[in-house]
Amino acid sequence: MIVDINEKYYGSRLALSNIHLVFNRGESTLIIGTSGAGKSTLIKSIIGKTKYQGFIRDYRPEDIGYIPQFPALNVMENSQDALYWSALFSSKYRSRKICRQMAGYYIDMMGLSGEKDHQIKSLSGGQKQRVSIAKELIRMKGILIADEIDTGLDAGVSRGLIGTLIKITRAENKTTVIISHNLSNIEMYDRVVVLVRDSGKTGRIAYSGRPQNMKRFFDTDDYVDILVKLNSVEENGLGQADYYIGKYEAFRKAGQIL
Amino acid sequence: MKYIFDYIARWFSTNVRILLFNTGIAAFILSLTCFAVKNGVFEEFGATKACIFSVLMCNIWSGIFNSVGLFCSERDYILDDLTKFLPVRTYVMGNVIIQLLQCLLEAVMSACIFKLFFAYDKTGVVFGNSTFDYLLTFFLVLLSADMLGLLVGMMITGINSIMSAIPILLVAQLLFSGCLFELNDVLDKIAYITTAKWGFYALGSIADLNGFLPPGAGSAIFSHEADYVLYCWRYLGLLSLLFILLSGMVLYFRINRMEG
Figure 1 (cartoon, chains in turn brown, purple):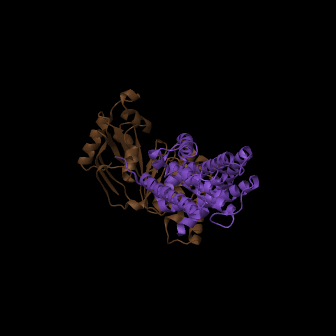
Figure 2: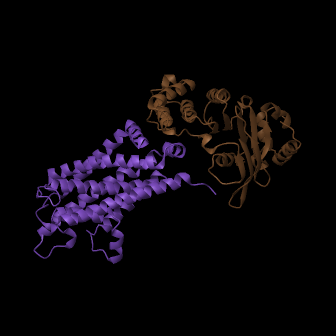
């Protein structure tokens, strides 16, 4: 999937500018960024919920599965039924028996076998998020967009959840894009995109590449320092967003792969 | 069609309690009302008119209460389902059928309570037995109010707004019924799209309110004739259809709305 968003306005405010990204099959991409950098706007553009100037190509809109930050589940159902209904409603060609089998398969895949008959309201936050992911996986979408799905989860649960999603991405050759504020799992991803707000308050890309190259690019030993450098002075940061936007643009124009 | 029945099966797998709770509340409110107004009913005009109006308002309240919070209560996951895989028409038609069953249950219950409290003339206007006339009127009133509740519930986003909308809807129905005061030309036109007007006319006709008045003093709006009752029922049915159609349209635009 190739994303080329030249400009995205909210009224007269330029929210995003010069967003050129490629999301490959079998790869997982983490999108991180400073507050108000346009992460959600970028996701809304990709899933077709907002207008923009530019184009997104090499994908089918119906092939996108969106996993929201807060699991959108009927908490009175059990996880087995939630997946069964999702499978049944998603394709008119599937029989009920096949849908039951698919639900069982994804329950096992997400490690929910022990809780499959429990009402969703009795599950933990991490387990609910696993059901939410499975609800998308069962719809057989090639592109998964996950919006801050590990917010509020402890570091261990978060790592397990993201690890499962990345494993499925590689095994099933999917394209996965994950927005997160959690930097502790950064090296698990295939690629990282850093979105920042420039001095004109417009969302721009400050980095897009392998996580292993990030520390060198930002001249730091700590991933958290990257965001400190990029945050504005008002936000107690170092206000270096414009510098790194320029540096990234220079790399991109020179054809250097990060 | 396959999806509609699957949706209904899914709804019943988790929400039977809601259906029973709504019916229980409706039975309680109606019993309380019937108990409060029972003196002189079907003996003199004023008491009978007041009773019919009170029972009508109970049914309208029950109908609106059935569905107005439905969409809001399941909004968190149903909007996601609607965006991804559940067709809007499946959701709307599924809910219409579920609410139809709910209204039928409540109408039967209302007719039973009404029969228990009041000794009305059993000769029917449309059917042979007036209990069936009352039953069908209660059903159409409940359904029409229910569909109005469904529409308003889909237009409003928060539970607080719904709490504010319910009294407004009820007051509008109360004022436009034509029971409390004579409506002028403009208000009478608006009243055409209210459940209260047609429900009140239908119930008043079935109860033969004119029969309690001296000859010639009766009103045409309570004409004790089968054609007139059918005319009122037809309007109640059309109102339900209108609200169903509008609900579908509101939901469709809500789901497919794109930010600027």
